[in-house]
Amino acid sequence: MPYSTRSSLPDSVKHVLPAHAQDIYLEAFNSAWDEYKEKKDRRGDESREEVAHKVAWSAVKHSYEKGDDDKWHKKH
Image (cartoon, rainbow, N blue to C red):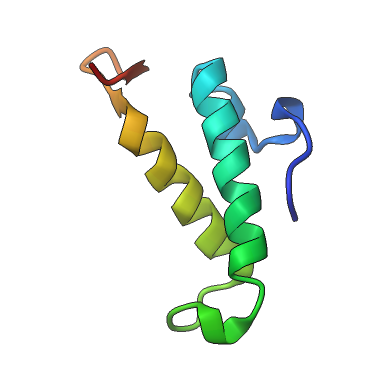
């Protein structure tokens, strides 16, 4: 289901990503949740939630990368 606030995000997102990256994740997840509502719009047998999480992580990785210190940093 869509997320309304950063605090409603999964722990695997909240405890790992910086605030701005969490905002990106939230927006991308919610957008994908709407876009891939119909099963015909998704590949294979992935659930709507699985697709939305993949899209959200992809959006984060567009602007952020995991550093050698195991923390996420904005790309330059």
